[in-house]
Image (cartoon, rainbow, N blue to C red; front, side):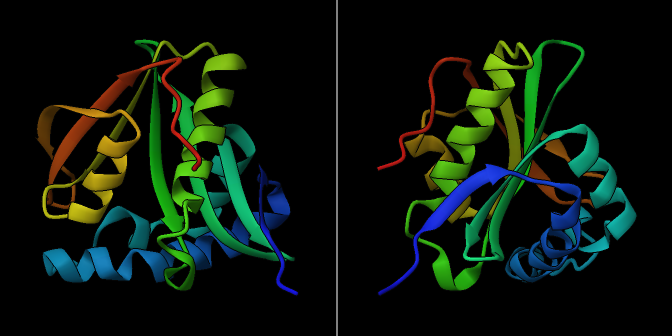
Length: 165
């Protein structure tokens, strides 16, 4: 009998697993752009710990293993910046990313007063773009990341949550 994946708020004890998972998951993004200096690959463990302590961070667990994570925080303009959504490569395509997004969106709107959700993804990241559009995000602009990667900016109003099915 298999275990089911659960979604919960991350704790300080999850920071190291999130850090390692993020490094694993973003290798394919780095390869897509030929750039191994993208933020998720150069972020320090201490920085991940600070985000877990201060931001809205959710994890997906399979037993004790963290197999997915997402982070968000409300910015000065009332939008929730959602980022670093990742799911272990062996579990991608099973709706875990959408479930993580839904949890983050609900908490950011309900507990932190976000009026809309905003996220960024690389312009070549077709799988990410498909997921984000499927759950209601629309392209609102483009920007160049600090690492030089061209990013697509997507947003949707708060209250339009990701479907989990």
